[in-house]
Length: 410
Ligand SMILES: Cc1ncc(COP(=O)(O)O)c(C=O)c1O
Image (cartoon, rainbow, N blue to C red):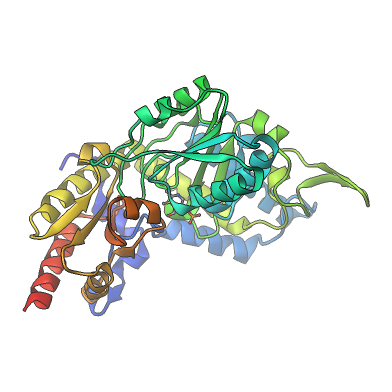
C-alpha cells in the first residue's frame, strides 16, 4: 500500500482502539456516524476543566481571558483548515444539523419566497433535506432534486432544467454518507452562481476525510461536524462568506450575541458571535482546535490517499462474498465508506452478529431514507473507515460476514 501514514503509531493515540468487545479487540467501522478521539483531544478537555474553566467573552479575570483566547483561537484553526478568509466566517455550533437549520431559518426566511426553488439532490442526509422542507412549506417555495443515476453519481443534466431567476439556493452534499460518492461541488457551485443561486455544501463527510478549500469551491455556506473529525460531541461548524453573515438576522437570541439591549430592541454583536447565542460548548470547541492540529499533522492528502487504498481493498474483498450487493460508484469516485446488503439477510441481524466479533458497523437507513427508497431497499449495512483503520480490520469484517452467513445458512 502506498501511504505516508504510520498507522500503527497513529493507533497508539486512540485509547479506545484497545478496548475489548465480547472478548475481541474493537474493530470500529462506524466513523461516518462519529469518529473516535485521540488522547490529545481528550486531554485538552480534561486540562480545560482542571485549570481554566470559565465562561468566554464576559469577564476580565485571568481564567476567563485564557478561556476566551483559546476558544477564539480554535475558530482561527478551523478557518485555516478550510481556507476561509478569516475566523469571522466561522460559527461554532452543536453539529452540522444545527448549522443547516441556522441557514434555513436565518438566511432562508429572509431570502426565499413563494415560487423560489431550492435545489437539492436525491442523496442528501435528512439534515440537508428536512430543514429545506420546513422552509419550503412555510414560505411556499419549491424543492427540486438532482437525481442519482444507477452507478450512484449525480445526473448533473438535471441542473440545466432549472429556470434561471427562480433558483435561490443549491444545497448539496460533497460526500454521500450512504453511497460514498464524491460530488463535483466546484462545478455545481459555478452552475449555481451562473443561475443567481447561492450554494450550501454539506461537508459533514468530506471535511474529516479530504482536503477541503472553501475559496477554491467558492461555496457561500459550508457545514460540518467536529465529532466526525476527532473532536468531541457537541461541535459543529458553519462557514459562511463574511458579507452573508453580516446581512443575516440572528438565529437564536440571548446572551453573547448582542452588543446592546434595551427593553424593546437590541443591536447585534459582531460576527461570528452574533450567531453563537448563550454559553457555548467551550471546552469542546477548544478541543476541536486540537483535533484540527492533529489532522494537519497527519496531513489531509495522506488521509485521503490512505482511505482510498482502504476502500479499494474493502470493495475488492467484499465483492467476493456471494450474494452481496454493494451500492455506489467505483472506489475512484468515492470516499472511505461502503454500504451493502447481503441477499436474504436483514442488516440489523448482521450488524448485531458482527458485534459478537467486536466489529461495529452501522445498519439502518443512515438518515438517507429517500435514497434507500430510490435504490428499492429499506435499510443497508455501512462500513465507514478512518485513517486509523487497517486492512487487517477489513479482513476481520469480511471473515465475520462470511462466518455469519454460513452460520445462518446451516
Ligand atoms: C452527509 C451528512 N450531513 C449531515 C449530517 C449530520 O451531522 P450531525 O449529526 O453532526 O448534525 C451527517 C451525519 O451523519 C452526514 O453524514
